[in-house]
Length: 259
Ligand SMILES: Cc1cc2nc3c(=O)[nH]c(=O)nc-3n(C[C@H](O)[C@H](O)[C@H](O)COP(=O)(O)OP(=O)(O)OC[C@H]3O[C@@H](n4cnc5c(N)ncnc54)[C@H](O)[C@@H]3O)c2cc1C
Image (cartoon, rainbow, N blue to C red; front, side):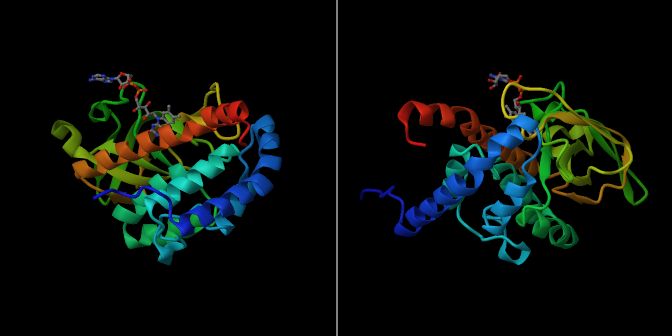
C-alpha cells in the first residue's frame, strides 16, 4: 500500500485563496506596522473576517473546525508575507476550547475568532524553559479564588494579549502533575507586563509579566492534568517552529524568487 501525501483539490484551492489574500491584503501593509512597532490589528481583523484566525476552533464559537493540514497551509501562506501567523491563537484558543468551562469559551473564543483580541500562552519562566515542571509560579486557593504569584518570561504577545493561559503550580510537591492552567485577563490589578527588544519581528511583542497576588483568575481548567502541560508544550514548540517562517521563509523566498 502506498500513502498519498498530495494535497487534495480542495486544499490546493484553499492555499490559492489564502495566498492571494496574503499577497493583496497583508504584503502591501505589514512593513508599515513593523516599522512603527505596532500590532497590525487591521490585518488581524481582516484575517478574522476570512475565517483564518479561528480555523481549527469549534464552529459554535466562530471557528471553522478545519483539520491540522488546512491550518498548516494557512500558516505557511500567511508567513510568506510576514503576517502575524495565527498559530499561537490556534494553540491558546484550542486550549480554551478543549479544557475551558462553557462560560470561558463563549466569552473569549468568538472575539478571538473574529480577530478582535489575542490570547497568549504563559509557561516559560526566567529559570524554567524546557523543564517546565521546574516552574515556580504558584496558584494558592483562598476561599473561592486562586491567588497567583510568579513571573512568565520569553512569552509572545505579552503587551497585546487580552488574556493568557497561565500555567501555575497548585501542588508544589506533585511536579508536572501538580500544574494547572488558568485563563487570566491581563488588564487587571496585580499584573505588570513588559516587553524586551529582540532581533526579529517588531510588530508584536516578546517579553513577560509579573503576577503579584493576582487573585480570582477568571477560570481554571486542566487542573492537575499532566496532559494539559504536555499539550501546552507541544503547542508552544509547534508555535515557535511555525513562527520561524517569519524569519527564514522571506529569506528563502528572496533567494528563490518565489514570493
Ligand atoms: C519564538 C519563540 C516564541 C516563544 N513563545 C513562547 C510563548 O508564547 N509562551 C511561552 O511560555 N514560551 C514561549 N517561548 C519559550 C519557549 O517555550 C522556550 O524557549 C523553550 O521552552 C525552551 O526553553 P529555554 O529557551 O529556556 O531553553 P533551555 O530549556 O535552556 O534549553 C536550551 C537547549 O538545551 C536543550 N536541553 C534542555 N534540557 C535538556 C536536557 N535535559 N537534555 C538534553 N538537552 C536539553 C534544549 O533542547 C535546547 O536545545 C518562545 C520561544 C521562542 C523562541
